[in-house]
Length: 360
Image (tube, rainbow, N blue to C red):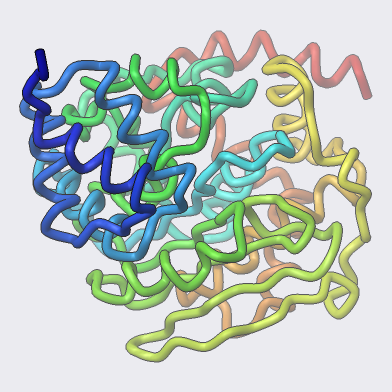
C-alpha cells in the first residue's frame, strides 16, 4: 500500500533523485511548511541534508533567507548605524572565537557593533557559548541590549530570541550534525533595523558569489563576504584571502595578502582549538592583549575589515593600526567589561580575569 508523500517529501525526492535545484518560491514554501509544524523532524532533517549534499543554489539560499526574515523579531531602532561580523561555520577547521573577538575590538575602535550569533551546532564554542562563559546573560531584555549598543558600542543578539522559527528546529539541526542552509543564512539574518554593514565569512569559495548576490538586495550600504583560501570561514593571516566587497551599489572582488599589511603570518594550528575552554581562553587572551602576534593579527585583520565596512577608516592598513592600538591600550578589554556590566554578571567575568593574568 503506497503512502501519500508530503509536499516536502516530494521536494526531497526531486533534490536527491534528480539533483534538481529548487526555485525560490518552492524553497519559501518548504520552509513555511517547516516553520508551521507541518513536517516531522525526520523529514526536516532529510530535507536539510539533501540540500547540503547537493549544494544549495542561490535561489534556495534566497528562499530560506526570506522565509526566516519574514518571521523574525526586529531589534531597535538604535541611535545611528551598526555593523556585524559573523562566519557561516561548517568548516572542518575549528578556530577560537575570532569574529567575536574582532567584534569587541571593532567596537573598542569606535565602530558600533550589533553582534548576532548563536551557540555552536557542530564546533566546541559558538559566540553565544563564549559570551555566556564570561558572564553575558543570553536572556537579557531588549532595553538592556539597546542600552549596551548605545552606551558601550556593542551588543549581542542571541539568534533564538529573535528568530523563533529557527529555535523550533534547533534539535533537528543538532541531530543532522553538518553544515546546513541555516549556517549560510544565519549571519545574513541580523534583526537590527539600523544595520548598515556586515563582514560575513564563508567556508567554501562557491558561497562567495551566492551569498553576495543574496546580500546585494538587502538594505546594507557596505558588506564583505570573505573566504580564507585554506578553509577558514573568516579572514585569516595564514594565507591569501578572497573577498567580494559591496560598497554602496557596486560589487568588486579583492585579494587580501597578509604580508602586504605587516601582519604576522600564522600557521593554521595556531588558530585552531579542540575544546570550549581553549577557545574561551584564547579569545580572552586576544582581547586582553596577552596573545601572540600571530593569533592577535587574525583578529586584527577582521576588525580592520569591519572598520572599513563601518566607514570608520578608509583603508585596511588604517584599520589594522587602529585595532592594534585599541588592544594595546586596554580599550578592548574595557569594552568587554562594559558589555558584561550592562547585560550580565560582571562578577563572573572578574573571576576569569585573574586566571588569565596568572598564565602570563
